[in-house]
Image (cartoon, helix red, strand yellow):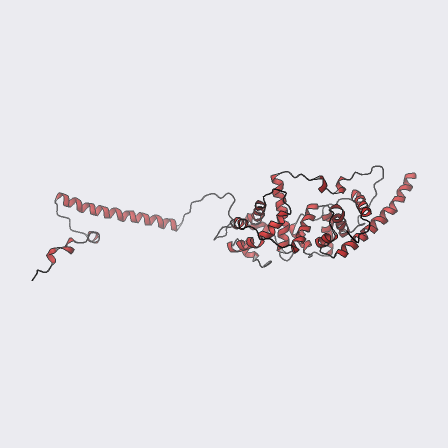
Length: 183
Length: 173
């Protein structure tokens, strides 16, 4: 069972289970694909794509779901978004607006300065993620906190520690570069 | 954004780091179940860190994680019935077989069809025999020949005319 759904009956293809599953999660899938769809996209078709993917090949994808690892609603949201993106790509080539591209991708490397070798562990994964959301996506602290499932104060603290590390590292490296440049 | 200090400095430091930091290599598969487990907070710390490392360089997956977390708090709007009906039709009743997208028409065979055809044949046979019997009597009357001794079959289909004969009446007193 997951979220009150009899998964074994569902993947056996029992009509009543499937109908109940659709009625219960159609709204969730609609919200999920709406977040992916571009203007003018047919949301009904995208939802149908998701349900089709879930039941095709004798419910192959549904059978991969393991309730002990994650919640059904969470898993369905991620599957729905992924399926909707794939469907939209098949229909038309994706054109990414320039503003949507992270600055780091567009950054021009400074060829005059020797690239600084950064220790792999300079920033923790959590710190990198917070800085990505804050600076690449312009997200608010509250939004980041919700996305990571932590307190807003934790986000601020993570940001502060990351900044300390970066300041310290670049402050140490810059004098070294200047010395090497003279030498 | 309060409590974050100098945002301009932070942005500059972050861009400088990103321009030189290596992109996370390999890492996790694009696995919905793993991402869902991360969103639900069910991964051990080391595994969660690996997912976060990977998410930094995979913006679509990060979007999915953000959306999945936001879905926890969002109210689900009931979808149109048309969406529900269309999706429910993907699985047929009563055997539950998934309706193929391009279903080929197949003839249904079996005992039901055989019984139907048998019934039809039987009714045609009975009708034919009945019609033949009536026709035989009519022909006999036409040519003045005494009717052949009636068989049980004839008696069943064409009851004896004496049923309504005046001869059977009691003479009037």
